[in-house]
Length: 388
Image (tube, rainbow, N blue to C red):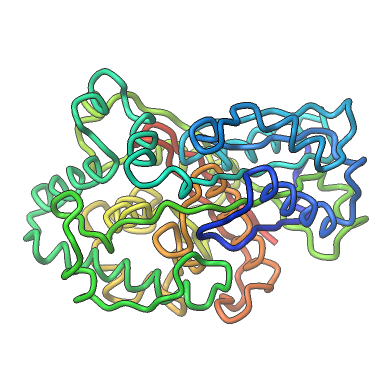
């Protein structure tokens, strides 16, 4: 297998967009290609993630149209990917595997989503379609409900009072909003405090409004290349050194929602391939769709022992300047969550950190970073480790 490098990356500002999915991805795709030192004619395949385009815009087959707008060669296939919130990460992983296997030399991958167009009721309903259609979504389970269950299970399993856990969860939101203030492309540019979180409306007990990430519009793109040619095009290629992906079934089969089994396995694969451990990471972009989700993730990724990660944000250990900065972009919680684009945006942040191009949120000397994206109710997890 060949080594794989990231040449160029791009994303737009997440939030509410008047542009279509096609327009958003075309813009970031062209920008990523330009930053790679390539031209559209050099791209040999497109892997585009978009989860809900059929509901958002009545557009279920966007990939070939993006391919055309980007000016890619007719002989370069365009593949639409869908893996719930892990969609763009899975797109990048599949693209990287084909480059590593010698099928392609230069591939464009990423995602786009225009979730705000649906409005809250339809967006909530369509997001829930990534749950089990017989045993979960049809009986009222939504993603806030799933993570609310996880929070209750975490408090009970580890003997933590729910009010205490809620304050530590609130600190996750405070941290990520503070990071987002330093990110001009973040959805939310607003600092909050613990009381703001605890006084916000209840969504799914014990999760309140500020425990939850928003519906967002946005797009992000990444150009991958065979590593032995990377320096022909860019001065600072970033290398993919480990990847992992795993799956789990219905929640009733997973039982213990405090341990995300698919994440544990995907991370194991990625660490093994990279030849490193969690102690080697300098920066992490992980899936904090809800505040409890960040706590579950840092434990499953091996950054903390199980049952010990809930105080990390409160202690400042996962903030900029802390032991291992988590979500310097602001995370899904404050940067935003356009589901088809989220994983690619996480890769963009890690690449910019490793290239020392992250501006005010730059982590000094960052050399190795990890991307963690979760799809559905713990059903799919994809991890990518990158180094400079």
